[in-house]
Image (cartoon, rainbow, N blue to C red):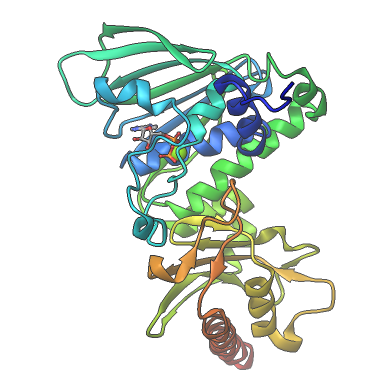
Length: 338
Ligand code: ADP
Ligand code: MG
């Protein structure tokens, strides 16, 4: 008797969902990233009971065409890449075609979408399948409603922390995205109560002040520089404004929030002896580079990436930080001597 069986679509989607959708904040991240990929300029996020009862993400982006809707919830179905070459030239936040199918595998999803037609479409996804699809009045864009997250995976529910912690993680996700996309307006609501809002007027410093507070933002100075392969810009804190951990050092690579020890190291090196041991600066570092030089396809959550020419990038960061701090030191000393 044979013992190997193919997993059902439902079970394999649930397994995949475990990697992509760990907690409510993963739903928020994936849905907001989809909105950004759909060229939205306004994104509203509402949650109930720490996101477990409901998460709604609404955008004013392109919408999903009626015929595409059943595919959108299929695993490995995406409009963002087609060929292997595309895989090494990722220009969007998504490309794996896993988020919507994963979310639908562990919750009850309703979607409302309109590509700019006189009428929109409303559909429900149950057990990964589109059950009903009906016309409805809706403005251009997409609204995804995620109800009863993890209702069918109790082990995952148990592992979640308090509502307060889950809310903090959702706020973190929206904050990170607002640092990458100051041109977009994000609003986050806990029920009807507004938790945060960004203007979407392109003013990164305003978003930094929103997140970390005015006092910190006032101690941050801009930097910008480039070489043949990289363009870096952002804000760094003067050495007198430090924190006891690295969590205030954000790295945004082509609009994607990433974690990279080596790049954090080069920022810290740029401060040299100005930084006390065990203290870390507050930084928002935006890196723009040719998508060919970065491999995003390392991990399902896409926070880890592999960089070509990493040494050159590290050098550019360290030198730019050094020069920016030296310049600001001069200004400071000059003021002190007056
Ligand atoms: P991926 O983002 O990796 O392509 P997803 O599962 O997140 O995979 O989404 C599947 C597809 O559904 C996307 O490629 C896109 O075409 C469509 N889609 C999802 N969300 C939106 C949205 N908010 N607006 C427009 N299209 C969307
Ligand atoms: Mg996606």
